[in-house]
Amino acid sequence: MKRFHILLALGLSAFSAAASPPDSLPVFRRAMLYASPAEALPAPVLRNPAAMWYRQSFPLSELSVGYGDARRGEAALSQDGNGYDGFDFAARSFVPTGTKGRAFGEAGYTNGTRRDVQWSETADFALLYPYLTADSVGGSLASESYRFSGGYAYTSGVWTWAAQLSYRALLEYREVDPRPRNVVSDLQGSLAAARSVGAQYRLSLALRGRKYGQRGDIAFYNDMNQATVYHLTGLGMDYVRFAGIQAGAYYSGWGAGGSLDLFPASRKGISASVGYDYFTFRKEMTGMNNLPLASVADHTANVLLAYSGAGTSLAWGVTAEGSYRNRKGTEHLFGDPAGGIYPEIGRNEGYTDRIVNGTLSGFAGSLPSARTVWWVKPSASYLDFVSEYAAALRRMSFSRWQAGVDGAVMHTWGRWMFRVEAGAARSGKIGGELALPGADFNTSRIRSLQANYRYLTDDFTRVRLGLQVDRRIGGERMLFARGGWTHDWFGVSGTADGWSVCVGFGF
Image (cartoon, rainbow, N blue to C red; front, side, top):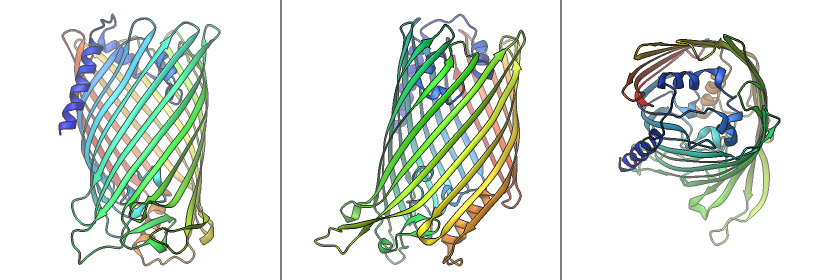
């Protein structure tokens, strides 16, 4: 809690500094401009910190405290758990520092529990799969997470320069056997430069870097009932030689990437982006002189093309996005130990996967200058996933589609502002295959993999509702309360529900 109080103090001091420059726009108008898709650059472009200079020209800050709960039953990946509940503190701020600078940042603290996690005692499952440390017992995992992000962009006329740095720390643990304790450190940074291309457009290059580490240990307080610890290698396979009680692991990773982005300074016109990111990590056995068990190389390429326009009373836009991701795992092979040292005698190309994703979306809505602002955002997407473990002839693949529409209305009435959001989506399987030759289908590990496949290929319908009420108080500040609810109907996996509430202060 001491660290939480430090974080709260930092957030409040940042907001105090942000509150000092006066702004001529009323706080409700700034909130409408920030929320409206008619005034936004595409989200992938805003990964470039130089584009943040053009995100908006007015200050806006927010501090909130909230609680959320999700219950998914069988409609979840086993390694993620079937539910979550927890509290969250969040702060964000965007501050023009004169006519040439923009400062922006976020901070947060989360304390919650992932319920009934199976076949993973490793945090950040989606980042480190399939090389997880696991056992057949599992259980709920408590966690605390701290996150900070800050950036600055400066323009000198023709050129805009920017930098951004973010850090995330995570502690995840369980207080009954088996007792994992995972400590995560994740540092990311980016540098960017943008140059004017004519009066309307900016061409920008951004470079990104990442350093990741996770230390994981599993303890058993009951010596008479110790579960076997497995080191998974994908699609129901594990590193058989080191199964047992070797429970300590360290993940050491780093990443690099960048993007070339073209975007309009006015946020009206064509936006385009091409990006690439590389991430690699190695899993080491800490109880065996940091034996390098496996390593992963992950390549991701992204493209985007978007257009946004506006008339006298209506704004519109269309966006096409695509991504390709390829992940390859390498297992290190060792001979007999000598003096506690295992000599590496070879390597095996093990697990691989490929993900192709494409999305076409758009929006239409009013200009954010009236008392009532509205918009609708339809979208359609396609996903194709293939994973293989060639040595065992195992394979999981599926492709699916999704289509939906989201909408929102914001209305001001005196010292009050109301925001209502709603959305609906439908998703279905196009095709799929799960081939597991040689697998023992009576084991919980394989049954868990089959359950994951059923969930990933299940048809579903989703509805989403949200409501926010703001009350303006003195000095163009506002208090707000926000709530949201989501419900999913699956064809086979049942239903899933989630809701969240928060209260906050903005200016």
